[in-house]
Length: 418
Image (cartoon, rainbow, N blue to C red; front, side):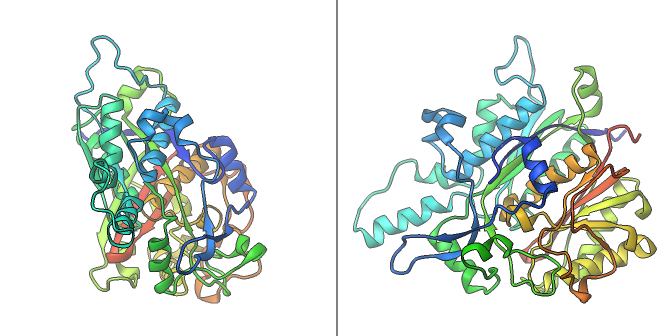
């Protein structure tokens, strides 16, 4: 028998902070966290729109001894997961006699501890040093977050990480869902984190010519998914985590259930390294609907991948039109990347969290900066251009599509739907 999966905990580190209410209210208000970034790097400063978690204090969030053992992507991730753990009403110390052998962690990251690598290269090749910190390997490894979380939370079950570019954390959440659904795990903390504010990462994305244009105050509205005048994506940093739990276990301990995760679709376009394909995306959408037992007309909202790239946005809308058919014009769609930026491997997690909050609170965040600008190639769905409250929302999807053709779709339903 397939088990039901409850979302009992939510946690994040975002440019708006870590408070869930404040985060969602700012999204509903269309408040952009994008700012113009100018670094003091040499030989040439990095200048581009960016989203930073400027107020995050790792020492305060984690304790300085633990934080000192982590690269920033791990600090962000562990802090977000601790928040989700607390939100779920779970205790960090193991209670007497408690067995957590089937509790685990599955995490996603796109680039892992990249700042450790960049710093190491500079020290060895530019600064002439002949040794690195003995923590370089363990700080830079992609599975650092789930390793730390397993130790800190005494998780004896699955502990692994997924890297699939911008679909990494959506896949991590989906695979955690599958573990619980199959009866192989009881509680899994899943999510993702990335810290992209490094010189090398900025230059690499700049070279692809997909970074949004906008300096000074214009940077605030630089990310405009589905807009006719969009110019590209905005890099961001942050983390988000969901505590997924066997439904009966959650009920037995009296947990608050934010929503139910009912479906997960994972496919590959198998057609191009960086160009998305509507057919592959549509297969992932249909798979999530099928596993969730959802008819297209039951879905009221999609948190789109929506990166604001000229090619990607119309292809995603085409996939939605293909799958939802006659219901597509009534399907509310928005891309919250317009406000919190593109968190790369953590994008799927923060957008899944926003989708859960939309379902739980019956409210829809908008695509900022879109009103009056919709690209004719992106019409055919109900674009949310202003926050909506009091929406009768039964089910919603969160899309994550990545370089390499990896597609992941998560389907959520209200906790009282079935």
